[in-house]
Length: 315
Ligand SMILES: [Zn+2]
Image (cartoon, rainbow, N blue to C red; front, side, top):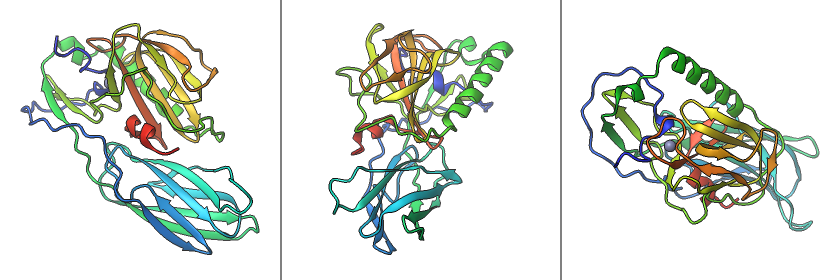
């Protein structure tokens, strides 16, 4: 059936809406980082953004370089959210002091200018302010209308209450910034040999009701396919959820999380610290889906972002 793997749990949080006509499909595109930009903060400090004008759902890599004085701490805020920085290891005594951060742009964030404000505290206790503007552009996401069995779209009150409680739990998890950075290096695809996934940000109209945008990437794969940790992280959730079925959430530290849904079986437990490539479970069709696939998502500073960008960033 054509709907297999295309109806995914996390687009089904129902919002009341009037019946709408099917709208033309757009190609779902992975937002591509535009030209990077560099800001001179004075005092031999510079701030580098992987993109000054990202689209909704993007992940940015920020880099602060201090050529002369060592930096002891950085405090940064964007869109009323804390953006935690980490210090890169120095190559040698003479190399500049380099601090980095990941900044997530939520896929539904209103496209406009948002200031990034930052204070670098040097080891001699000077506080050096620096700021940059991030001009969020509208993402181009597909929209599709589907007709499905009514009970698929309309959970009963008990199911709704369960789904809402789980949504609140996930919100609380994603709002937690673990100060330790567990990941080290680049992120990997969660399935061996499967590098094409889609549906990120897709808006769905099911039986005339608008669902939430699809917050992750769907990788079609046969049931039983092993799913691996994209990077090192702490398991903070490993259990069945209403929409996403058997689910694993990894905390990579510094407010960065990856989410894996619809497993047939789960191989890890909450509290486990897993390495890159560790087996998390097997692809399945649990939760609100019509066929087996992996739903993979990434959240940074509470923003729902395209996990494929996590792979492409030079971390
Ligand atoms: Zn999905």
